[in-house]
Image 1 (spheres, rainbow, N blue to C red):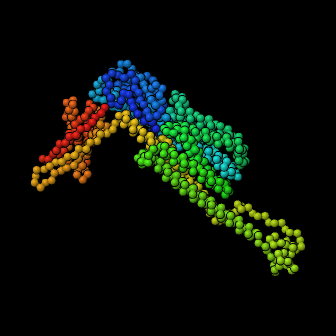
Image 2 (spheres, rainbow, N blue to C red):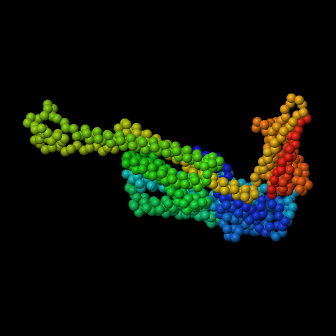
Image 3 (tube, rainbow, N blue to C red):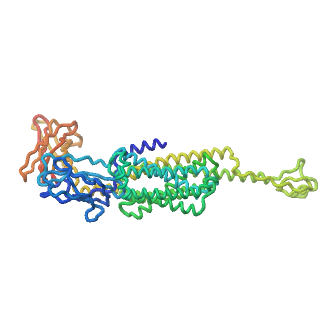
Length: 620
């Protein structure tokens, strides 16, 4: 099961991790042409960002790297990034590649160009802006999942011991130790991988001392260090309770209170470095995240503890009943905090289906629903087992209360209600002699009837099913921590539009081709032309021809050209070619901003064609 989980994480986490911040504006703007060289490059984001040693890379028109100053924040504002440029920058088109770390610990990257004086005849190609190394990202997601799983084992098992009070806790000692070691190991693993994860380099850079030093100065790095410190305190607490655990005794009250405080602290190390620490309502979001993590750990870790006891020791019904109540409380907290976090992360109902975050959240909700159904089945089994055992005990008590009579009937001279000196309801005794001691009643839990044994096996199977489904829930939880929330996706789209980032231009041009032949009807339809990004410079062009019924139409020839009358430029032939169902041109260079005239010529036969024009706005 663990191997399958790892493979799922590699598949789901193989793509770039989405972050919470988005680029709001750039100065100079992307694609702009300035008369004189700027003194600095300033980027503004939708929220605070962290800077790296290599946050900016600037390349000149010959694709040589420009010597720049150290990256910093503009005017002390945490939502900006600035780098100073040399005095003699030259002219032509320059390329800027940037990389920062969002407030919720995820790296983001991008690239853009600007020109000084006159744009270069051949604009340089944008450098690769991959957010993360696939191998590093996959390993980091696995480490993140193992940390969640280990926290659930450690916190959930401890809560099970404290609240459910099993008579023998020795089988759970190994579960506590496994949770502690797994959480400590995964935390060290994440701390080492944090540097290459942020810089987008390979896993081999995990042992680079400079990267580890930089990580220790960031908020995610400090959260991981704090987690290790809390685990050290938890280890000291476990060592002090070692004797009690070996003897099967429950920990002391002081130990339970200390453990509860450590559990809250561990949950804060996640809340302080993930989505809850950025965006709207941060205090409420962090509180909700802590409660959500703790209730998840208590429920799922408690399931693992209960399953362990089922296979290694006898479990009294009262212990199962207490856990059933604890699980019900945990589910209530999960539902309340989950609804709030979903609203905060999505922002709108449409984001459930329109964003990756929403779709992953729906998958998680489906898994949680299965988990609730399995839990309801376990609860019904516990209830029926209690009822069956109560009936068994009552029947046994009724049998013991029956009064046996001597063979041959009642003793001579016996008064009504008496028989040879014996009161009805007592145990048989020799006539006139002392009464025999009452037979001891066998404990109700010493033997199980076949029906009770079948119910206990059914409960064991349903708990096992809950544990398996809980693993799937943890996988989706891990994926969600690395996915851009729907609300942030909407903010990023708005920021891109306000920053003038590429937005495709779509133009519909209706046409009608009349035929002079008698009895032949004219041909009408429209041509939908898409220019991507619809800005100065190179654009991709796609054109689709539709008939009057809205269906695709195949024509023998389509020509498209562009003119800029104000500057006496054109016509520039787009040189579109038939790509099988649509027409396209890979590169259409429109050198200046303004209102261009796009002329479309549609030929439907050897003799029939028509030309239509429409204005197209081209921006920088």
